[in-house]
Image (cartoon, rainbow, N blue to C red; front, side, top):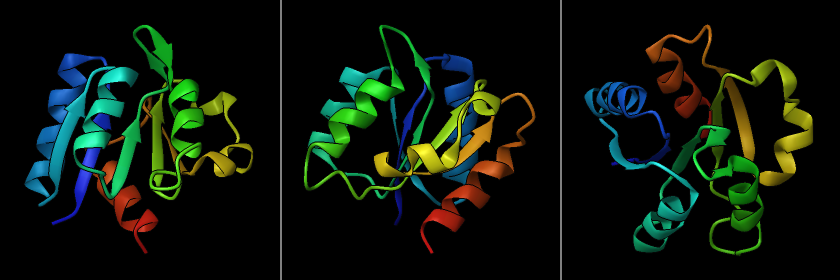
Length: 121
C-alpha cells in the first residue's frame, strides 16, 4: 500500500484530504508542522509527501531543505499543496524533490489523487 505523509496545519483541511486519500486506498499519516513531519518520516518513510507551504512555526522550505540533506529522503516525491501556487515555479523547486504544485484555491479533492498517481509513475 502506498504511504502518504500529509503535512498540513489546518485541521479541517487535513481531515478532508486524509479522508479522500484513505478512501482512494492510500495509507495516510498526518503531521501538523515540520518537526512532526520529520519525526513521522524517521518512523516510517513515506512514498509521497503532500506539503503545505505556510506551516505554523516554519515554512515548508525549511523542511524541503532538510529532506534534501539526507540520502534516504531526498528522492521522496513532494507535492506542494498551497494557496501560494501562483507565486511558485516548479522548475525552481525540482531540486528539492517537488514534482507537482497544487493550488488550494481552485483544487478539487481528486486533484490530490491525480497528482500522487502522476508522481509515482
